[in-house]
Image (cartoon, rainbow, N blue to C red; front, side, top):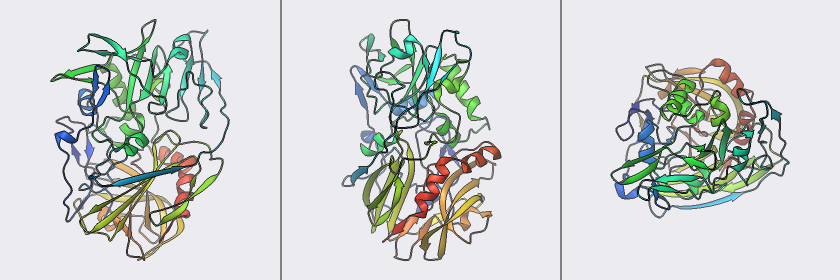
Length: 452
């Protein structure tokens, strides 16, 4: 059972967009594969929204966690659970007051100002009960942005030949920005997808445009009678799936905006910051204890824990997924009991431990650390994640020399990675991450872990 994941690219539904294929595939499994009947569709009046069709239309990819075994295909925001899997959730939220900052938006008229939503749960700086998708939402102080209401956004229906209400919900469709006559909102956050066990659903942003009277989503596609909203990936997701041509996230996103005929002079004001993660940038008001599925510890009080258990052959798999206040996956723990055999399929991939902090949790092989680990495939593409590693693991080496799971002293094992994939484009970005609140939160989280 060796190593972090492979970076092999496969096309999604015939598209050329890269999907990561995990290095590790279970030796024995009887998990059913997704079939056409398993695809989940959303009905919005006369509009059928297909995540898969939307992904293909703009060359996007579904959210896939490469640190999960391929046989399970159990993903953040995408559930591959067989029937009979159970889930529960618990959460506590930190209290806080929002603050807003007025700035002069670049390229806008002098009469227009903007506000940034606070990183707290309060959203007093956003109109109509809207919820932020990240800590730095840029919301232009204009009449059209004040009028944006995700419940009243209109979507064109080919079948009805008219615009119909999207009927979105602020909690299910948080906003990323409003600028230059456009507004963006999240299709569905990780938390909603995971809690509702939805699969094959597009995860990203939809763009609405102000037509002078109302907000409209014009980016639609119709294939075989199925109407689909067309969206684009967020910056963090774009970074997590390296471009086959080596283009930066900024270039990839700009190309997608051009294809959608969306023109803004500063895409980050509309789409959110070009960073590897949209995690909270401020400390939580407090921490909260958790004790689920034999795993205990402490978490940020504004994280929400959702648990799920399932069985694969003779192995019981317990999943603990922690979502931040924006609905994104902050951390995850997967406990295997007992741990099945796995095989490393990418001996050419190397790893480097960029930073590590010792924690109290002990493995069968000895003491552990929580570390930022970067893997590089033979073509030079990199991906990173925060992971649990042996305290004495070499700083660099072959990815297959690292365990796919951490064997514990009680016969159980923990998945190697505890976060989604992080895409860094420079060494400075890696260092910024290590100086961030997110890294601090993850070190504190891992430091308090106990497994019975």
